[in-house]
Image 1 (cartoon, helix red, strand yellow):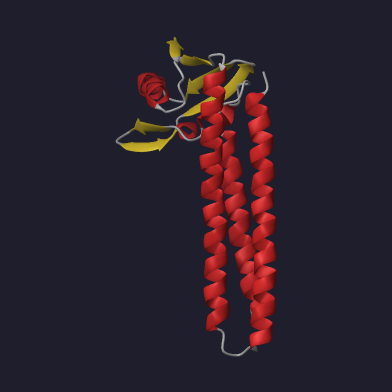
Image 2: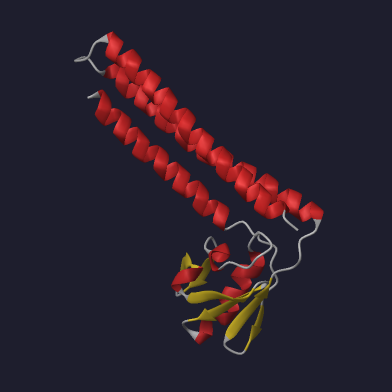
Length: 182
């Protein structure tokens, strides 16, 4: 019983780590990366869809993204969505493609991005804490196991929690170093 709860909790914590890493990948560093635009939503065909469903994104150069819409009529909507995102990008369309040059980052912008990374990391920590809290609740509700088993499982749960928090901290440090690299 307690092992099932711990396994389920570990899966939930893994999802928190993966989500945090996915969010980190959208934070702009000095290099162009196609997944920087993954969070952008575009109004298309009467609904709001992710950018990658209406266009392909590539990084032909280190400081430029190239967005190629699947439907040529979507160029204006995609350009507008990129411009209005909180990424601070200024796209320009050239015929049927949209070029998104990445401005060089100054020290102030780098510090802002580090703050964003720390906020995203806190969201990941919250997911991990919630998984731990849910597991504790389930452990306390167990009637068929002894108190000693529950206490042992809680210790294992805390160790699991600490390990996942440490993994997030390592990811934060790596991303921070990547952003601050000139």
